[in-house]
Image (cartoon, rainbow over all chains, first blue to last red; front, side):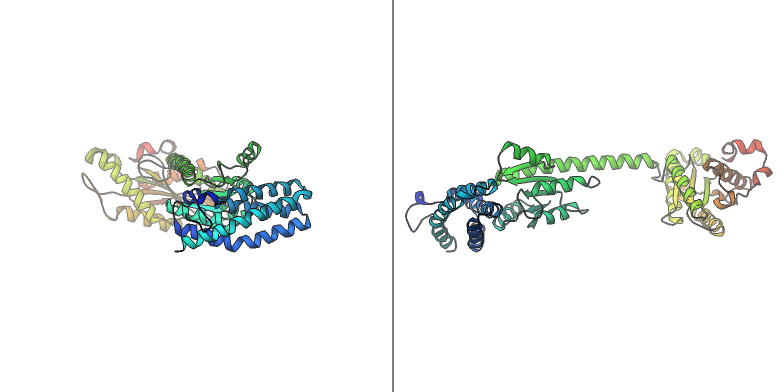
Length: 124
Length: 322
C-alpha cells in the first residue's frame, strides 16, 4: 500500500497480512474498515470510562472487543496493548489501567490515520 | 451446507460471513451465545457452528454445553474461535463439548480446512443414522411387502388391545389369508407369487385408515388391526377389504392371477380381558370358518363359537386352509 506518510515499513498494521485475511477482496476490506470506523470510537469511550472508574470487568470486556477488531485488521501492536489491558482487567490490577490505556491511545493515534489512508485507497 | 456463526463483534462476523460464503456455505450470523444456542437446538437447525468464546449472555463453551445436552438431536459440529491460547483454556473449551478450536485471528485456509473436517464427521454421522434407520426398518418390517413383520404387528396389536381396554373402546382384529395361494406359486411360479403378495399388501394398506395397522403374519397370511372401531365398522371394513382384493386379478410378470381372500374377524370388546394369543386363536377359528364356508368371505368370531367347531380342526387350522 502506498501510504501518505511514507512507505509500508512505517505502518502500524500489516497490510500484506490483512490482504491475505480478506482474500484480496477489496470490497470486504472496505466493509471491515467502515465497521471499524463506526465501532471503534464507541468502544474506546467505554474503555476510557471503565479505566477512569477502575472497573476490572468492563475494562476487560471493552479491551477484549478492541483486541479482536485490531487483530482482524492485522494491527498487531495496538492489539497487543489491548490484550495487556484485558489481562489487567481480568486480574483487577487497576493501578496499571491508566498507564497501559495511555499506551493504547498512543498506538491508536498512529494507527487511525493509516487506516483512513488505507480506506481512501480502497475506495478509489 | 448451513453454518451458524456467533460473534458479538461486527467485524469478525462480517469477515467470517464473507469468507464462508465464498467457500460455498449458507451462513447464518448471530450476535450472542443465547441466540446461537437457541438456533442450534431447534430441529433442522444448522449442523455446523463457529462460536466465539467470549460473548454476551452465553459464552461459546456455554453454547456447546447446552447443545450437547440435547442428545436426541442429530450431531452439531462446533468450533470455538478464541484468542485464548493457554493449554487450560483449550482443554476447557473442548471439555465443554466443542469439537475443535481456532485461534483468532484465523487464517482463511486453515478455517476452511477445519470445517472440512467437520463436514466429514457430519457425513459419517449421516451415514450411520441412515444405516441405523435402515436396520430399524428391517427389524420391524417384512422384507417382501414392507408391511409390519410378524413380531411388530403382534406388538402393535398388544399395545392397541391395552389401549382399547383402558379407554373402553373396541378394536377389530382381521386375520386374512389368500385363498389357494399354493396354487399360485405352483402355477405361476414363486416370482409371480411374490408379486401377488406385494400387490395384496398394497391393496390392504389402501383399504384401511392411516392409523390402522397391517402386518404380514405368515406366508400368505396378513393381520389387520383396526383401531377404535365399533363392531359394525369392523365387519364392513373386512368386507371392503375382501372386495378390494377380489375386485381385479393381479397382473404379474408371469400372467394375470385371480386372487381372493378369506377373513376371520374378531372384535376385542366382546372377548373381555384375554391375552393376545387367545384372541388370535379365536380370529383364526373365524378364518377357518370362512375357509370352510367356501373361501372369499368374511366370518366374525363370536364368544363360544369355538365349541361349534371340532377341536381337531382348531388346533392346527392353517393346515386345512390352503
